[in-house]
Length: 248
Length: 85
Length: 202
Image (cartoon, rainbow over all chains, first blue to last red):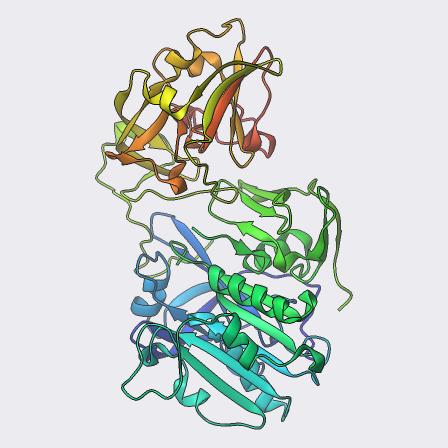
């Protein structure tokens, strides 16, 4: 099991922006050079702190997109009325410095207590970010744990990491559902994740699956309630809620 | 403005308690509900950070930052136990 | 000493605002931030009431219709949040607290505002009378939205805005002061933005 210290100081440190990758028109992955990075577990996040020249400070949290052992990276979606996300997704350049603190989290991490359970990952929009870390880590471990990622996005253009997700790996199935717009002839699913879709896609509770749900608060509520309704024990449904509006 | 959950204050809690706390188990002093801190309802946009019980909405914890110091009120928790892992 | 983030400006902050109108330590914003310590209540108007309480008894109560029948004022004021944003020339519509307290026992020296969702805040009665406070149900020519405290909130612009309790349902008259929600968690008992009374002891 990855050994990030549970105890130990968590201090702000200065990270330098390295490569940036535009994943979609609204989403950018930012690699960070963090001198004193202690390593991390898949699913953890870091906090970012920005200081304007008049002393104004803003802080936000971002899931780590990188797997344990890879260069630290976060993926940021530009929110329309955002205060921090437009700066990170548009203005930040290689060589810029930002303050970060991390890694953070001991609940929304994979593996949890064992690896053998089938794994269900349900992502709403940029909620897919921690799952990239989890899926890469799973591949690095050579794990063949049956895994399904149900990924809800507005349209195919909004799917983040598509090239990577479309590569079939041992025991991994990726299912997209496009909620606002589908390409002509789209053979896949459309519409929001609901109880009926979960019933078809989620592993049966008899297989003792573990589920991770990440995305906007309303999405997570709907999915978590749905999974518990299918018979998933509450302690095998892990949730991480992102801000709906006004927090970005 | 939607509420978030205990994951959103993982860094702040680590700062306060000196250790990771999102997987810690909290017990609500009002209704007795037990669960991970990560699953509490958290309001960040306020004069302080307010953590509420997901079952009964009672206040579990309030953190007010004053001159760089975190003032923490835990009276809404009957118990708070970090995980062994 | 935190490094400055190159090119980061944050929320719209108006550096050209008339500084005489801006209390110390505040930024002026053109947004209207939503701050909350709990879930937004949604009380139907037919169940809504506003009450003056004292000693456990209801001294007087108004239904939504009763409230609307009182003299209504249009007010333009500056508001100041303890989280450091100020908003100038905000336009409200409401009923003066003076009208609501007209028949109440004015020997009571303090009030505790109570609200849907359990929020409370305390004020000296002298600060909610004399034309300094309203129960406001209109903002910017529209009905006050739930996220901003609708159907009605307390409006006490001369104090930090946490005293302008959202989702207000009444005032309890008290002989002795009793701290409300934020006051109990370390905020100032009075909250004068011009003396920067943010925290207890300031």
